[in-house]
Image (cartoon, rainbow, N blue to C red; front, side, top):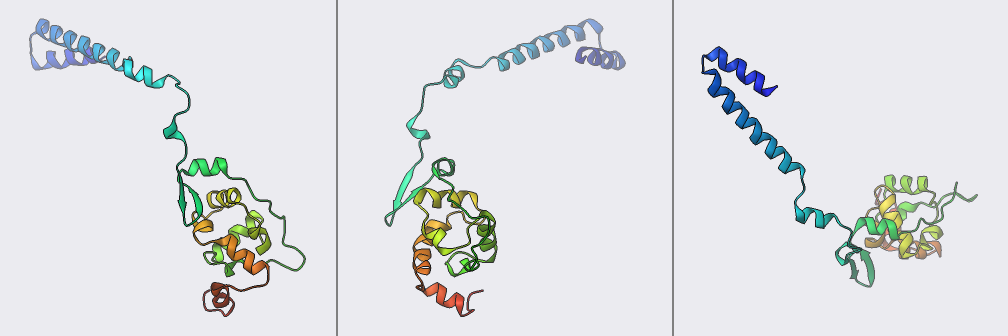
Length: 175
């Protein structure tokens, strides 16, 4: 197709027909060679595609910060995390105001309720794997469960105690 267009253009411009055909054919050969070279993967690419088993650099990086374990790779946290048991609805005495936990605002409170978490004792019972799952799967919770120590705060609040933040939130000074 490209050859036909080139020939039509050269005839219209008045160039010599034989010279143009030779040039167009040489260009077509070069293009075919380039296309073939690009289609064939290089030897090192083939070697890279071979399966060499698990590599250490694919394993998640784990960091220890103030006695808490953080998984640096998000996909590893999802795979390692376990979904905490939730409830279909709050218990008969009503849902706790999860906004008393530092880091939980009105939107995150609604997201936690939608996921089935209504009470302080539910959050207080989370393991590290469950907390990692919540951080990765509940919208708005990314990084907050561990950073804001939700589990410790929830344990205090479930036992009937108060935290500094819950005092301010209950007085209406926060939201």
